[in-house]
Image 1 (cartoon, rainbow, N blue to C red):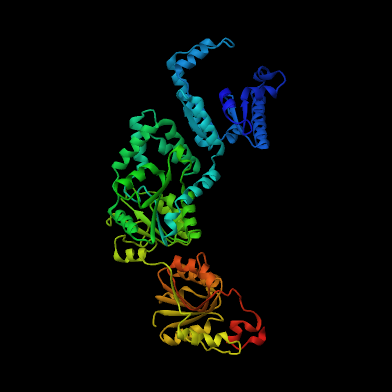
Image 2: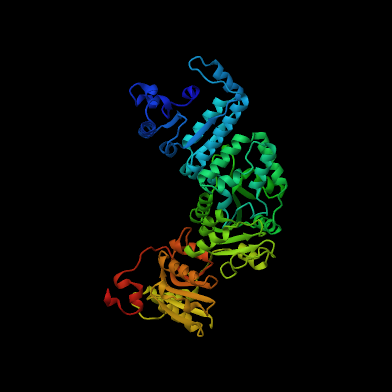
Length: 588
């Protein structure tokens, strides 16, 4: 502690000795405290930790302390990290013998070792139940490592993890900027029928027998679950137990045993040769392993890996980070995003995706909790999700109505993957469009003068879309016709016998109405073909980030515009398009 006081900046850290703080609360100091009854002692212990917390909050400093060996609920609610200084038994025995200030009982080395193991086990249990991160510090360079840990612990949090991850991704954003479609793939049991996290842990246990063989089950099956704290504790444990040289060696050992699914190998190779497609692997496991797996598959130069697993990586990847990645790709980089995953940690990013594929492997190795997670997600959120059976003989998840099958090597899937996502037919300069547009551009002209088969529904977005819809209906006389003032006017009964929907409007301004109608129709019947046609489409609605463009890309909608306008003016009064079309300008 004295060395840390010298090494760490005093304006960022405060230092506390538990017994000194308690002694300051009682007249007569720590000796008087020891003579109090247990109830009064407990009250003072709580007051002491509350006082420390208050001081740290007011000064905006990180508190470092040497606590007393008795921990109250208030202590456990306040501590964020515990570093256990694991001195050698011989060193502890020597200190006891040479202590002239106090009379200490001398114990054998075996008793000291047993006492240490019980104490460490107790700490691990307390920490896992109270979201406290734990680290056992050993070795000659204890003070140097302690300083690095204190600096890391002071800044790292779920919020910091989020802030740190974003600029790291931005560094490689050039891979995305030139593409239209991004494939985001989980790694373990998605790219290959292997759990590299389990394989690495087993390899660590073989090499370092002091590592608990049931650590993964205890950590992720306990109170922390799949939280940020569980992943951070995993990182800290590997940093504590595995040397740098051994880490690289074990990663290579695991990676060498991993073989990709043939279908996934073909998919990634297809992405590599398609200019419009970028592939990103995002893993909650060890980044180093999957970089080596892709290198051995000759895919390392074309597939980016986002992941952590080591303290030096600086961040961890959990479900929230995965979902944020997909959201950012869609909303900031305007990508059409396909997500491939296999387990509950992938569900959040599947909900953010344009298309989601659940990779379903062998029943013995697949996630047992994924069915429940999928059912809940499908019930609460709109998802475009299918399942890929690898191999094709395995039993599917849920049922094929809830989770339709998808064949990754089929011509239909490949065509869906590689074709351009945004199709706009601009008729601004065509003679026919100019002829049709003339009447609507002349404020002196009024009336339904615009013009536009058995399984097609023509929808007039009221009121302005009716003249165009009537023209389309006349061209397709066997089509059904529907007036819709809002998207809710379109019911499932209107769509159940239809394969195509044509949405007609006179003017698309910012695209809100059309986007809502598209999303509503897709929710009612996800495989129906949707076409949007309008006399005028404002340029902003189909620019990058525009509402109509985003909806068209996400839901595979084609757009036919008789004219594209950069005029943002929305007509009112006597110039309003709808009133001119229907001879009702007197209503304004």
